[in-house]
Length: 202
Image (cartoon, rainbow, N blue to C red; front, side, top):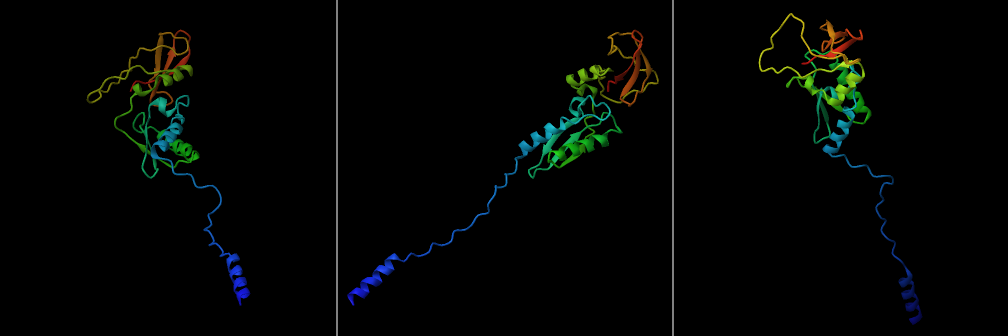
C-alpha cells in the first residue's frame, strides 16, 4: 500500500502541464509611420522647385516667380499654388501638368491651385533667374513700373533702357513689342547686329 502511494506521487511530480500557446505575430517589416505634414511639405517643395517653365526652360518656376507656395493638410494632401505671368497665359496648363507629374513620380498626389491676386510681377524673378536669362541670350527685365490704380494704355512703343545680352551695348532698337510670347519683346543690337528677346517689365 505504501509503495503504490509513493509511485503515484512520483509520477504526479514529473508530469508537466503544457504551456498555453503564445499569440503569433505576423513576420516581416512593420509599416513605416506616416510622415508628418511639415516633412511632406518640405519634400513637395523640393520637387516643385525643380520644375521648369515650359516657355523659358532655363528658368525654374521658382526662379520665374510663379511658384507661390506649397501646403500640406493634416491628412497629407498636397496643394501647390502658382500665379500666371499674365492673365490667360497658355503655359499654365503645362505648368500644372508638369507639377502634378513630377510630384506623382515622387509619390505625392498633388492639386495645383491658381492664384490671380496678387498679380505676378517681373520683380519676382530671382537673381539666379536673371543670370540664367542673360546666359541664354535674353535680356532680363528692369524694375517693374509702380501702379496704384488703372493702367494707362498707349499705342506708342514702350521706351526701355536696356543693353544687348550678347555684347553689352546700349545701342539697341525695338523690332516688335511681342516676341514668341506676350511677356517678351523683340530687339536688335545695332552694334553686333544680333537679335534678342527682352522679358518685359510687368
